[in-house]
Image 1: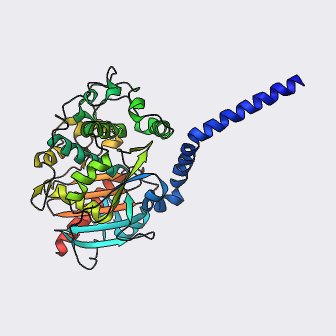
Image 2 (image 1 turned 30 degrees about the vertical axis):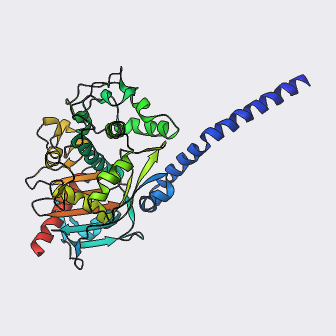
Image 3 (image 1 turned 180 degrees about the vertical axis):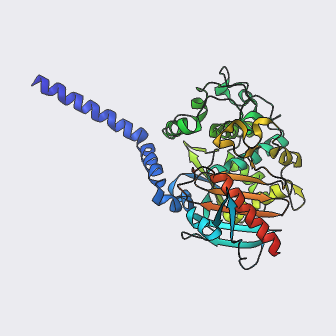
Length: 398
């Protein structure tokens, strides 16, 4: 009888603990399950067009006076392109890479615009890591407004969690350039980091526990936590959330036509890549950089910031640095810079999200995708040749 009573008490205690655990973490466990389910290959296209319905987000309201591109009938795109001595037909390449939408603009005129998987002009497409380029823009604005003194400031000056750690004296600029030296592996450590933060651990507290692998500016190692750090610097320096700061200082000032949304992780904007934006609004953002940071004669971004964002003079920033697969393309302030003489720059997100800008030809291309094969060798460089062929074909047709 006594034994049964003890077993009963233990059972009740376990049930109570499980109950408390579920009350505290049940929603987070549910969110983790939802996230994992959303990223199954068969769900990607839907997920990337409906993220604000699936994940918690914060709204970024558009202004009252949008900028409108002129629009022509869809041009016939180039027949194909060459990469590594292989010819790829345009239509087949778009299909093979599971393109969900593509937009081609030349001199502020839409030359081609097409949507797949049920998308349309008002659809919001997940940025994934294209969102890093937006964070870079917000950092430039925070510096111009004096909230951040300089990109040479140490990150510990703005993030208390880093004081007394190996990360304290890493310059902001080193994070911008993906050359912070933090001992973190994007392939091996990201899933653990994401789960810990999703389950409630503060991101900066988690990052503070990583050490330093090498001195800043020694190597370029693509680490998404660098962008998370920059997001926190901006938030702490301005006293505003990333979504609030972006709405006032960027979104309402560049003629965005649609509201955007920023995915939240543990209640905070996911700086490393959580935006949902319409295709044309991605192009409006690219247009700001194409025009040297100016919109309607107003300098939204300092021209010098735009120039510095594309600077890849340091050895670690150049294409092919470290002979690393992540570094086949050059890297500036959270923008990818291909090798070439036309001043091209790109924002890239996993699963095939692209903003490509060619200043020499005044061409902007936005391509969103739901491609599970985005890790194939040469994937990025192949897309560069694809975009160049399209830009060349559009320019010749004009």
